[in-house]
Length: 89
Length: 345
Image 1 (cartoon, chains in turn orange, blue):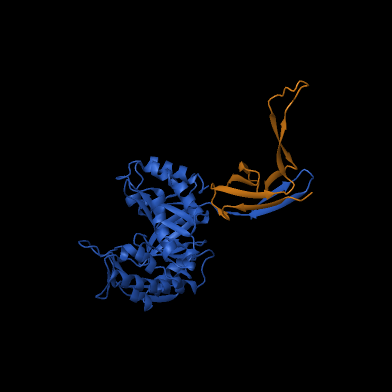
Image 2 (cartoon, one colour):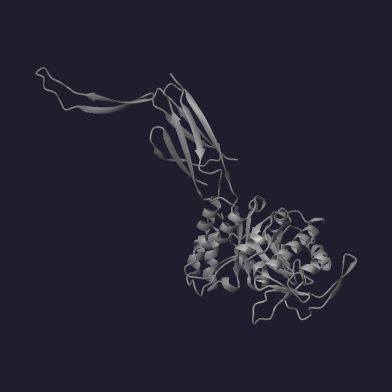
C-alpha cells in the first residue's frame, strides 16, 4: 500500500482579529480509487431488474485538522483531492 | 506563533502530515481626543479606549503633561498609548516674543518665532518657529524643556512632530521675510524634523518613546515629499488623518486613500512602519447618521489590515471640529460599540 501525501497552505501569514482564515489542503493517495458497483438481479426466466448502482471507495482517506491555538476549523468544501477549511482569526 | 496541522490517513493507518504557521495581529487600538484638550477620562471610562491624541506647542511652558492636565499622567500610567502632537506652531498666546528660561540648571534664550504657516488668504496667518531657526539650533531650549518635563511622566509616548504639514504648507510659508512654496516648505520641514528627531534620539528617552511626522494626508505629492526613506529610518509610524465630510464617503475609501498612495509612492522603510491615525471623524452636517458611519469603521480597518501594505495600529477619534459627536451620547455609544468589536477587541 502506498502512503498518502498532503500539503497545507493558508491564504495569508498574518490575520487581524476577526478576519476570515482559509486553509487549503491538497491530498492524494495512489491507492485510493472510487468505483461504482452495478447490481442487476436476473431470474431463471431471464427477467432482469433495473440496474442499481452503489458507490464505493478503496482505501478512503480521512483528514484531521488541529490547531495548537484552539481555533476551530470548519470544512467548506472537499472534492476528493482539495479540501478547504475556514476559521476566524 | 499558532500552527495548524493537517493529517491525512488511509485505511491502513498510513498517514501524511502538513503544517502551516500564522500570526494574529494584536488588536487595533481604539482611541480618542476630546475638544480643547479637555479631560477625556469620563468619556473613555468603561469603553475599550486604549489610545489618545494630545496637542501641544513647543512654545508652551507646560508641554508634558500640559497645564492643569494631571489626568494625562494617570491615563498614561494606566496603559493608554499617548500620541503627543508637538508643534513648532505658536498657538496664539498674547506674548509671541523671545523666551528666556532655565531647564535643569541650564539657561536658554529662544528667539521669537520667525515663520508664518497656514497662509490661507483672508485669514490671520499663525506664527511658528521657523525651520531655519530649528536648524540653527535656536530652538534647542524648547526641546530641552519638553524633554525635561517628559522624563517626569513615567511612560513612553509617540512624539508626532507637527499636526498636518500639508495644512501648514499648502499656501506656502514665510520665514524672516523670505517666501517659500509648498514644495520648498515640505523640503525644509523634512530637514527640521530630522534635526528634531536626531536631537531627541541623542538623549536618554523614556522607554517606549517613538516618533512620527504629522500629515493630514490629503495631498499625494506632499505626502511623498515629506516621507523620504532617510527620514523614515528615524521614525516609527506612518500617520495621516481621516475625515468623512461628504455623504458619498465610505469608511473604507476614506481610511484607504492615503494608504493607497503610500503603497505606490513610498520606499520599503516607510512601508515597514505601522500606521497611527491621529485623528478620524465624521462630520454630522453631511452625514446625519454619524453613529451608523462609525459602525462601518471596524470592518473597513479589518479589511485594510488584511491587504498588503502597512498595518493600521491605532485610530483616535477626533471629538472636536469636523468630528464633533452630535448628539454626543449617541456618537459616543457608537464609538464604544465599534471599539468593542474586531479588529479592536
